[in-house]
Image (spheres, rainbow, N blue to C red):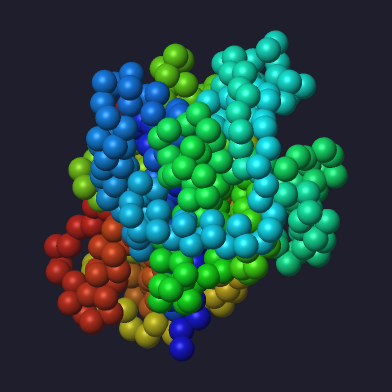
Length: 493
Ligand code: MSP
């Protein structure tokens, strides 16, 4: 039987249009899902929308829409974007769907059975932007530091989850890597929070009406974060679904740094309480700024992913260029910055002059000097073979370690060295001089292009599919003599 692999993205708030931040995480998961599929795994890749809570109810009202109509529209925007970016998810969960609600009820029932739910009064501050309570001492000038808004004072009856009971065992599980939190800095962040003064948290709201009714007390709705976290199980049709049986526990849950606490403390604690296996790994990626600044509507620096796709060309060119440009900017293990002004230069140097030009160069030499065929794929220059094996090892290591940025870097380093190899061997002179070594040189660079295609496939699937078609034509001796490859046309600045 095929080995399974389950990877998740956060579900995004249906409060507005998707931006390149959401695209980044979803692309990251898509590349890893495709990579695992190529490795032969049976992959489930989940994403979707977080559609309840007071923030969404408020935005819908501001737009003079019913909340359900509003989230229906936003969800469609996201789906359209995922299609435009070539995101191949297995299923798309929406928290207003019946499927989700049904599974959430089963999970809440189990949580109740744990005996760790009690009712009490909460009095304190609530930040609507975070959809979470916030402590006075975490405010900066009386404002939530993330949203720069004044939190509301609330006093209400809530049902609480006895988180504290699970903290000692959770701490051990994290320390001994039974639950891996990567990178290490994010694991330490969580261990510090556990060691400081984290409180039990409430799992219901009395004043939030736009939510799933709490089955034990109809005056309450389920706290939006609690039911949102449950999406990772509801999408698999917990508790009876075939997918649940097949894919849980998740192998990798990707989240942005700002929601680490929810995923690395609240979520595993809930799973411990309901006695379900914990995910294997939580990958917490850094957040990026754009041109050195946090993306915000007021600063007008929110990059619209649809415009970015269009800017680089029709169909698969814009799609794959955007995929590459977003993932090649910074190492996701840290926070990073995306420099919009460098996009076109990078497109030209890495895609047009890089991948596209190298393949074009190799194919046209094979056409000119060898009538479009390669002799023997195994007859490879030793030096190239060695560098190729070394690159392959590094690439695999980086992909397994979820380091897409570095995986790309080593492929591009290899690519540059192949270009240099061609410059130094000068196959056109070898051809003129009837040099016998020409076959080996062309075989080597052809094999190198084939490998590069294989490595880049998860990142730019449409363009690589096109490239692979031509590679196959050469292998079968069927490439047209006047063939011209124009994978990524240069963009004039
Ligand atoms: N709905 C919650 C998540 C619930 S998951 C059970 C939420 N939604 S969100 O719409 O705010 O999306 C946040 C996620 O979008 C981040 O965790 C991150 O994955 C992605 N990003 C949003 N802005 C980003 C950047 N500036 N940089 C990188 N990723 C970003 O939180």
